[in-house]
Amino acid sequence: MDDTDSVTYSPFVLLIGEAQSLILHDDAMMVRTHVFEERSEGWLGNGYDWTSIARVVVEERLPEVRDDLDFNSEGGMFVAIGSVEALRKLGEEMKRVFDDEASIRDILGRAELD
Image 1 (cartoon, one colour):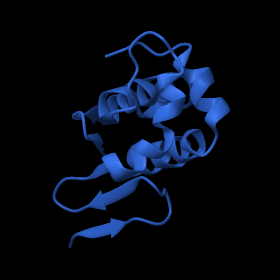
Image 2 (tube, one colour; image 1 turned 180 degrees about the vertical axis):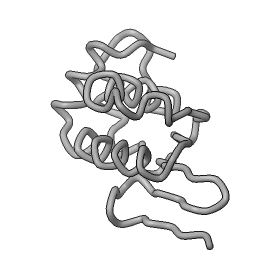
Image 3 (cartoon, rainbow, N blue to C red; image 1 turned 120 degrees about the vertical axis):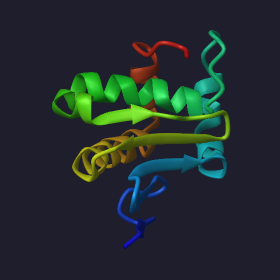
Image 4 (tube, rainbow, N blue to C red; image 1 turned 90 degrees about the vertical axis):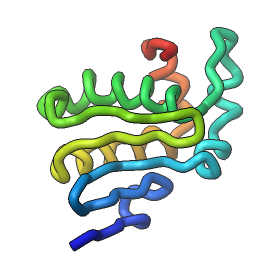
């Protein structure tokens, strides 16, 4: 049975079914684009950039799920794939980051441009 949770981790959406994923669509990313554009290194705030953020989040806050996650983002969408448990943990942390521009800025200081 497929299930979609678009509330708990909003603006991220958790999709549960044959393949589990946590996604962030372009429309939601645009709300925070200005934070990325403040940096001069070429950050755009697209799906690839959110993957860079997620990689730092996993390394620093969720090392226990590192092997349970993979990323398949593109310019217009952030996509994390993995176990439901790992995606829920990532969803909680990514929502915290998304909701706090200072946190995004802080993580960008350590993230690698993809």
